[in-house]
Image (cartoon, rainbow, N blue to C red; front, side, top):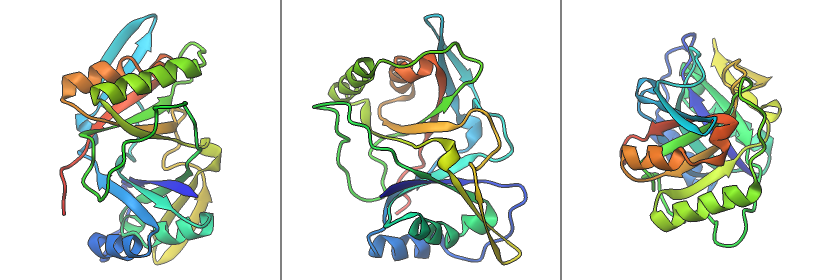
Length: 233
């Protein structure tokens, strides 16, 4: 089963001595970790919402919290126990906190598959983090509209893939404090605007914002556009 790890900061985190590269090598070698990359600081985020037909772009993250997503990893684990083992051995379980979210498969129809790529170098320049917005007018995205948006993005080179996530109620939070492993239910932060999915968006900033501004999910939620760091390998 696939899981996304959200690697998050935590002001209460402790100094970690472990090496991230050793963690990557270990779990890549076991075929459990498929990919992952760090993100540039949250202060460089652009947030996109669509309200009343208007595309609203603001600087900064949509969800205001002291803990922010610093990167992601995608796993193919046997079960949640193995995903927890992987997360617990990550240095950021000590220095920060790690949210484990099961991937929920969604079929948008023919011609909507993720673009294959290998290795940790991001296939896209940006990660679009899709969030709920309890204050937004109720709106259920039309599956046909979502499929059309994906196909248009594939044709233009803007959309390179995405993962739909199970509800935040299925999230597991992993931390190490004082040498003790802490496993609790819930997301990386206690916010109402929880993450529902991630999308890999390519192009320059203006192109990415234009594409995200047509995302059907932006009508009922918000999309945070975060830029990847380059290939660290």
